[in-house]
Amino acid sequence: MPGPTPHYPPDFKREAVQLYRSSGRSIPKVAQELGIADESLRRWTRQHEIDSGEREGLTTEEREELSRLRRENKTLRQEREFLKKAAVFFAKEDGTR
Image 1 (tube, one colour):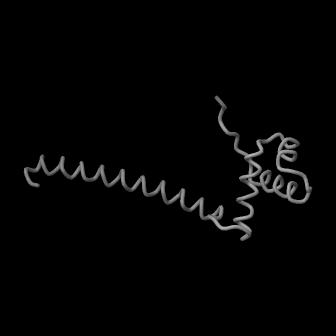
Image 2 (image 1 turned 60 degrees about the vertical axis):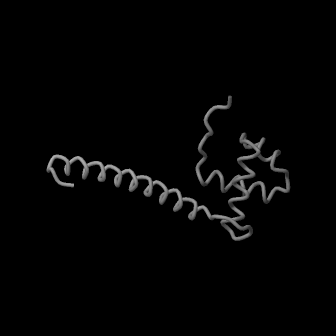
Image 3 (image 1 turned 90 degrees about the vertical axis):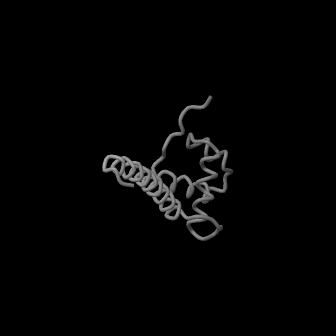
């Protein structure tokens, strides 16, 4: 079973994509030279194409915002559930509903 996926800095990803695009070599060759997985370079290249408007899809900024909003939504749902339970608890103590 493969280990955890390493996290590469944005500058490294950007430079890897530029190297691939300017070299005329295949993704597997460039990925091997850089010591990364072919699929990583392929994903980074696709994302670069989306970010630069060459391809349809969510830009990096849109993906980050979507992730942030999903986390925020999850937190708000948890807080709402907690407040509902607290309201029920205190209503029972008060003898009211």
